[in-house]
Image 1: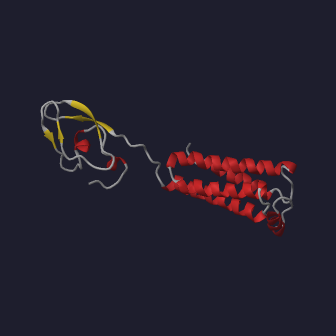
Image 2: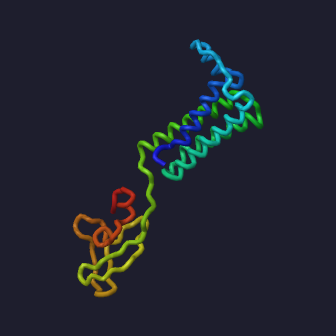
Length: 190
């Protein structure tokens, strides 16, 4: 998915539903009439169900985006907003809770969009690399440590001890097919 479309679509839809339903959301009716806009009922008796479906769509979109960037902030805010809205509908009827939940979903969509535009998605670490001995040409697949560099490697074929070449941090960066995990993550290495 190129953009966080589902969370944005769900949030925009629930705000449009709220703005178009003056009986259910009197604050928006008052604001619209202050600007000279008339009111109309968009979904009639279905407003509550359409609104809740759009809340679920927004949370689903945020969850899908979480799977891509692994940032829990937008998902936590969206879940909090959804809990506020559903508790206001089914546990304690409270208009301020619905408005707070709507603001939470709007904030979650904004955070989700900011995360998408300003942070690169996390890539899974590749922990296996094929090391090639420059002395004898022997190749062997080795597993790298996740959080440390390996400074020496002894070739099992010719017993040559491999050391990192100048400018590289470890033997995997010098002689392997895959760089070490700190380099894969874009972190400062050893």
